[in-house]
Structures are given as structure tokens and as C-alpha cells.
Length: 113
Image (cartoon, rainbow, N blue to C red):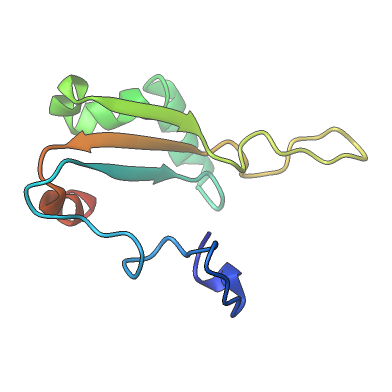
């Protein structure tokens, strides 16, 4: 959950996905997140990603060494949302999360930038 969506809730069982709660320790393994969101994506960018064979292929086109990295790829929780009344998919749903295994948690911030 994002900090904004907490709406001031002060519950010990709910945290925001921020550096206040998620830390990366130097020298310890970690996962770097690539959060792929289609909302507000220009059509030309989406078409290019699809032409490359999808998100993972597009990432490899700019970062070939990722092909050797351990990873987990899953659909975003917002992926596949649709209107109940019409059955039409909601625009922008269909994101993905890619978790890349990193040897040193201190490298996650640098990787993300």
C-alpha cells in the first residue's frame, strides 16, 4: 500500500511501501522491483513494448545481462480489472511486477535509478 492510500491510518498490521518500512541492507541479498504500469502510457510506447515481445523482452533489449538474473515476474494486482456492468477491461490495467534478485541490497537504489 502506498503512503497516500493509508489515509492517516495508524494500524500496526498495515504499512506503506516506503523506505520507512522497507530497507535494503548492504551485503545482504534483496529483490529490486520493476513496477510496470500501463496507466497513462503513450500508445506508441505500448506498441513498441509489444513489438519487442512484451515487458521482459523490452527490458532485455536495453539491459541484456538481466537475462542471467534470478527473477520473479507476476501480474500487478490491478491487472485484469474490468467493468462489472459491461465486462470491458479498465484502461491501463495489465501492469506487471518484476523482482530481480540482487546480491547486495545496497545496490537496489542504484539499480532503480
